[in-house]
Length: 425
Figure 1 (cartoon, rainbow, N blue to C red):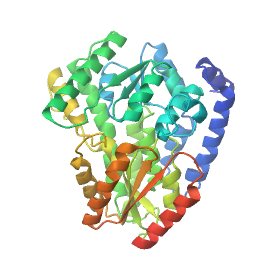
Figure 2: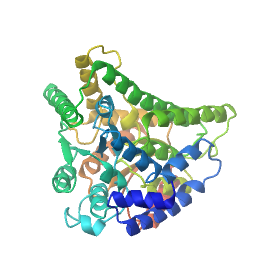
Figure 3: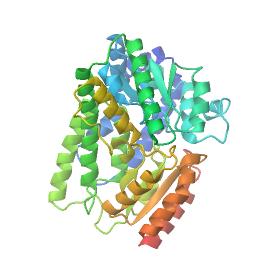
Figure 4: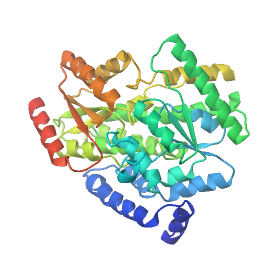
């Protein structure tokens, strides 16, 4: 499509064209500085570069074409929303804009200033009319994973069509029962909206599609664990981020091809960094596009990120839905069970997350862990103390970095990261 066609498309979605052009200009420069400047990138990353360059272009065109065919577009902010149900009803599910300072002043008229950057971002994107994904949605699904989101959704629901899933705060049998009822309630809502019914055949197909995407990301994580690692942490973060936007079948095929290239690089003993480069793991809050600040700081300071314990990482890909179910009820039970395995900081107690972090640190042979916490994110800030103690007992150095989406603290963060690297070297 031509630039004029894109602008006509964005205008039809009621975007602020001038502000949107400014956003894309900043995003393009930011992307070039952080990603295109890397040495030794794989050829397969060209696909991801293209997808990101067209993230507000061709992908939005695809969504609008799907809507024209009668398909519904479902927008989400969280990995708790089961994409399998949307796919089983021929819907398209996409992640929404929440990774940059956008419409911050407007957002602070609806949510307090001491609200985490992610929440202010998705509210700001809507108020500033900058996110074509949000404007393309027939339904936006929120979830009760933190108090900030719960209250923000009350205001957001007056701006866009909202549906809220209640996520339990414990993992007791009663909580599992509540969650299964939430899955059924959500399924009924989608069925009513689409005028279709979830069948065992359609759900089985959808489960396999989403599982296959998880499998290819698991394959990627196993390959990147090689010493020396064959791919930068920045590139893997980008892959995980794009998995929330791209067509799942197309994405799975592209990343499998990329993994084939990684295997060839590993066979040759080639790495994207020298073998003695400090290996770090990121842990904590999710990083939505274009939140690349901290990974860039870490890797430009002389380390490499070899794992992400976050929703834009292993928390989203670790567990598969059991594919052995034959009946619809069995599949829905398997679906509910899989999502209850997510170790989000909203759960109490959350020993499962501590075990997963310790296990990841061992398997990836990391030299240290950087806990990333968005300012004012209470769940992950509270768990940071427990994670730090667990890692210390395990003999793994760690540090906690609290930040937001602004660039004002870049030098301060870089100084702290460099000091941490000196201690582990």
